Image (cartoon, rainbow, N blue to C red):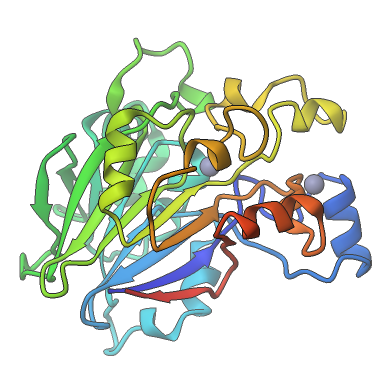
Length: 306
Ligand SMILES: [Zn+2]
Ligand SMILES: [Zn+2]
């Protein structure tokens, strides 16, 4: 299984247009020797021919251009067989509207995420220019289904959705009662090799089911949005704790670093990193701590082969 990280940042990217936090300030000035990050999107393939995108970030156009494997091979063509959405946050699905150039799309999502994106959304009409422009396929929890593009041809990969504690996207808050389909992680399983990728880019907690999933995985991508629960508050950038935004912090008592202690996974990668996170500073104590725990930090252009 080939995995390409097209974007590793949380919503807003790194640097974020309206942010002058120490990380954003220092990367702009060159004090921080780090590379900018676009918003989270990952491409997965078994054969290198047909690719499946995990989430569709607002930067999807440049992300596709920066990844030759995703370039068209005919006058009208895309190697992107389908797109999977793990929740309805705009940094995960706004990119769908940028794929409006009259190309048939296959989108896998939970019923809740599908409805949240399409209902009452006048902009969605740009993806309804002709019948069959979008084919939605439902991701139901704990069901393993074959991943395929529009032609239905087997891709060698299956997907299983695992509910992950989360919340509705900000623009839909208060619209509907809570639903476990609001936020999911996915397990992508390659039949030929038996390899499993567990992808949980947003999670407010590690449930026993998630833990069991990680134990079986060859590679885990996990929510690395915030280092600390009070990260935005202590920087004077907001009044919400990480937990209120449905992101389990990495560090501290009960953080994901601790939650993963004792979980045996060959490869562990933090992704969906917020621009305020000290993990973005290569020489920070926090970075050393996660690396000592066997973690890597995702970056744009990172490739993993399982
Ligand atoms: Zn996000
Ligand atoms: Zn910032």
